[in-house]
Length: 105
Image: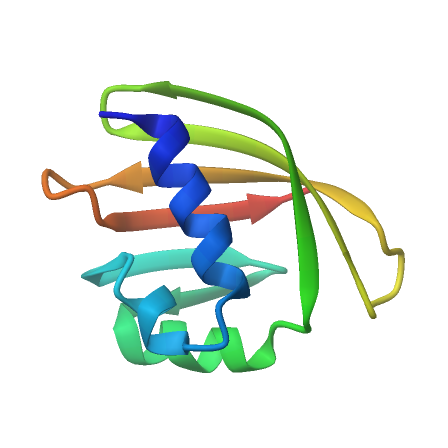
């Protein structure tokens, strides 16, 4: 699995105004943990993205093993404490879709 390509695709699509392009990165049973909340399934991903402010990402590092990847990125935007460095922990299914994502400081 090419972790760098998967992570690059994630951050590129996160900036794409076409939210469905972003949602297409996730498996139907995805679980996302962000900012103390848990989002389950594609409909929740859509609701979660509507809540996320406009930001920019600067990826600092990417590491991976088998079906997991960890990216550290600086996130900047119109929110308190900006910019902040966050860890994005990805878990992928066999098709390369995100089935788990945890975002934490």
